[in-house]
Length: 241
Ligand code: SAM
Image (cartoon, rainbow, N blue to C red; front, side, top):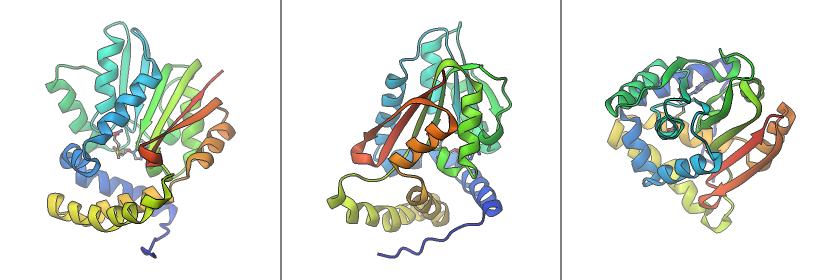
């Protein structure tokens, strides 16, 4: 089926991403639960487990939005560790910071573009980026930037929508993404456009093997990925040595 993809010019993409997340910031959490049937919580828990994060470590949750991962990391690294919640979008970051403070959790917050991170080389043990990379205009630059701020021995975990591996389910997945999602966006958030963008950005994002190659090209080592929910989502991991 032709769902009418539109290739967005580079400079327009950054503006569109800013508009989308400024517009959804306050309803972001509720929409996330609704649209994924709560499964995003399992995907994120899996990422935390895979990271094997330890007390005292330094973690950057990049494109961290409302801070789901940052919150769980903060509970594990404790007072001797440090978690930085970073996002390019001020309204998303504000919602995240408020939400964590309400839960009694203090993390450092930084408004930062993944393409040119404002942190020193070799700073973090773990960098996570959940559902953020597909919004970035220059993905190779973001991957290089992540690698730079990782300590030697550190790991990057990229959680992102990917290519469905269960082909018989494709018609249902397409129907859900391109018809039901925008409708839910319209009914719940009165914002069909943002959720149409979401569906389009998912389909245009590099698939499992392509992202793996991009990480290797950026200089990550021991790169591998795990498919979750039949490849709807994949977690890519790469190390800096
Ligand atoms: N990580 C959170 C989660 O999993 O719920 C939020 C994901 S949200 C779908 C994507 C986030 O990426 C938004 O908060 C957006 O502002 C952020 N983002 C988009 N482009 C970015 C960039 N170039 N650098 C940093 N963050 C970016």
